[in-house]
Every structure is written in structure tokens, then in C-alpha cells.
Length: 113
Image 1 (cartoon, rainbow, N blue to C red):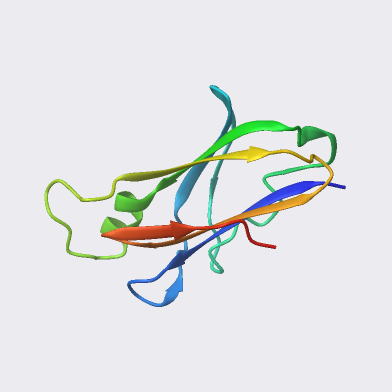
Image 2 (cartoon, one colour):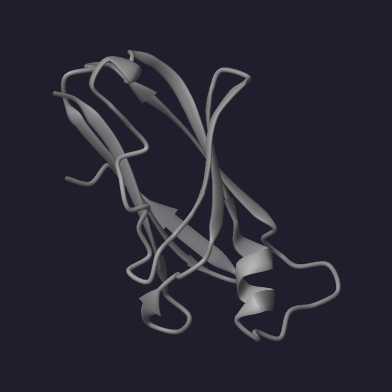
């Protein structure tokens, strides 16, 4: 059974990004709004089983709101506000894991396992 998961690591502070808001879209359709837990993850898969379909997806992460709430000193206009990751699902029966490693001034992502 296929599934889509994510987690967020705060690389500036060396910890999971607890409480970061995220949204998942398929095309222009909003599928899910969630917040990360104490481990920087969303408790359940974002999509699984028949809800996961091949196609183009977008994850949007509320990075500046998270860092502001954590007490980081950001400029009035933060360098990163919302980090958007556009990705594709080719095999709806596979596990797709989309991690985000983020600081106020940079981020990285990859297809995890």
C-alpha cells in the first residue's frame, strides 16, 4: 500500500521542527493542512492507500512563522517565508517520504525512505 510522509528538521537548532504548519496540494486542490508533532513529523501519513494517486503534488511549509514562534531573530522581511516543494508521484503503491531540513537561510530536501 502506497503512502506519503514527511518530517522537518530544524538544522539551525539541531532539533525536530515541532509545530510547523504545512499544506499538501494535488494540482491546485488543497488536500490537507497539518502541523508537525514533537518529532517534526505528522502523526499519520499525509496520504495512503487509494487516496495516494500518481501525479504532481506540492508541500508548503510555514518556515518563517515557525522560526518566529521559536524565538529566532529574523529580519522584518525574512529570507525564507514559505518553502514550497513540488514533486511527483509515479508509483502510487510506493512509499514517498519528503523530508525538509531547514534553517532561516537555507533548506534541503530529498526523497527519503
